[in-house]
Length: 528
Image 1: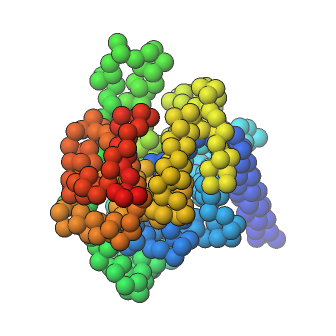
Image 2: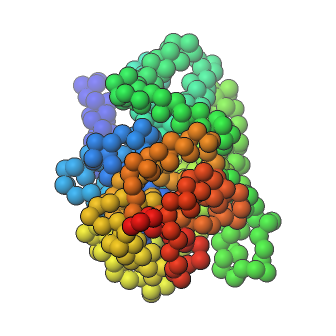
């Protein structure tokens, strides 16, 4: 009889945890379903969304990311292509559905971490979870970056799992997860590695149980190798992939940057005279949120280390967000605009909600509401559903068999591309669309004649000559050059980043006058 109460209590706790997990999963799936129902068919982006969509189409045609076309890391393509293969549809709505499933998994992990961090349970918990769900989901944009956003929450989950019970098995599993995450994005692998090593060192402070520092690091490292096996096997088994993968890494070091940088929008740099009150207020909040990623990272890291030294308990999810905050701040600052802030802010948001989940009611509810309201205020204008609702100008356009509601300018671009293809590249003939519209190939279901489907950075003469040979072999019917100085930098015009390819087009194609947009330079193949 002496053991009946503890066993019953443990069984009840397990049952409650299961109910909580089911509730959180239901909330996450319902929120994503409602969001997708509202804006899943809104908007279309020939730029970054087209970059992802084209890559998934090519994988379905048995091409290999990085080897056969410029790409993100392979994981997201094979995830999407696998689900699209089941549906038998390679359209943009099917792709968005595959991404939404990944998004729901990310939201579920984030909400579950917040729910499990609460020190007491009550009937009002579900209202807090709904506030947390709204806060998290409004930051889940742009839609073609939902892999990156969800991965950031997976990373928090992985390190929470390790910090909550640092037994040998969990070091191996944590390493495996970080390795697998790197298959989806090597930058996330680096962030996860930095944070993991920090957590491992943190766990070694006043170590009482579990593996020592060396053994823990060895187990974690072995796990990384296991998780990264898909890419390792691609390197070993696919001819040419090893060289292409290495070149993609070397190019990053040559550029000395992971992205095209932008000035940080600090609150004190806002030009209030040139913007509306609404936009000025939003920009100020965005600036403070950039600061918040750094402040939270520094303060949380300092606090969890101090608590460890004092041998006081710390919520495992807070440990995870503390060590991930600064690595993901790097992501936000690599191109300091709100889209990248959204990809780097989740350690801050989840960390704040973890703290609030156990705070006193008079602190918990006002601050959670303020955080949610601020998030909605800052982000709602960037969601395509709101953009169509606010402008009242979105038009119905058929895109690869799917009916989308898109802004008139993009609709005009889609019509232009179809007209050019019908006139100058019929019957599946390829064309050139450079440097910023990889979605043109996906839209018209054509294979790009060039490997570099998104030509942002300057390339070497040798690289350009290889691309010219590919163009010669493909015999494109027309060439479309979006002649704009990206970020107002003249040196980033295509004719300056890729002068040899640009000259080849001038020498072998004839210009077509078109009043659609002066930045659209259109050429038909000579003799076509």
